[in-house]
Amino acid sequence: MAASGRPVLGIICDRRKSGTEFAQTVMERYVASAIKHADCAALLIPSLPELMQASEVVGRLDGVLLTGSPSNVGPARYGEALDSAPGPHDEFRDEMTLRLVDTALENKRPVFGICRGFQELNVAFGGTLRRDVSEEGRSLEHHSKIDVAFDQMFDHEHAVELVPGGVLSRAYNRDALRVNSVHYQGADKLGGGLKIEARAPDGLVEAFSATINSAPVLAVQWHPEWRTDQQADSKVFFQLLGRALRGEKLEGF
Image (cartoon, rainbow, N blue to C red; front, side, top):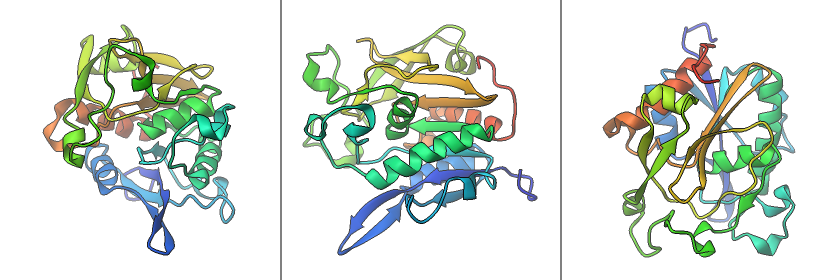
């Protein structure tokens, strides 16, 4: 832990085109929610795998957060053809994240994920992804209509059932939550060693956990960073993150 007494969280960046250049970006809501509700400091990790190694930064961190993003995990990462999954893709982030996950867990650092981060972790553990869950004739829509305003996308919600005895059911002390849902892709085959924490009513996995080398892994498909200050349930995710960063033993792991 840092000398200041607050743990330091590493947050992965996207690589996005900005005009004629590329930028390393993270939406501020992820950073602010983590700093405030996990009570930590934060450092942004650029997705530049050809210029830096995950091992150069992990030793300076107490944990890692993989955020959501407009981009999708490249399908080649889970053994499918490029035309089987819609873009945009971010190969720089894909590569940096996979290295970061491996190195963090080797060094007993917790790794938490949100949305794309949930999908990245599933792929890192050998799992696969569904191209677009809404095209499978499922009984539940997992994202809003495409013509709504950005803020309104997060108004789309559904219930999730929490698995009894899991990390989330113990943290919330109940068996279900209502969560926002703005994703097109989702988990297909679950990665090895991952334990299901929550399912949507149509059976889609919405959260999972694991303990690797004594380090906790927790990821959710929904967006707890969206208006966290107004959502008591969303604060719980970041409170769990803060406890993990401090090396506390979390019930259910």
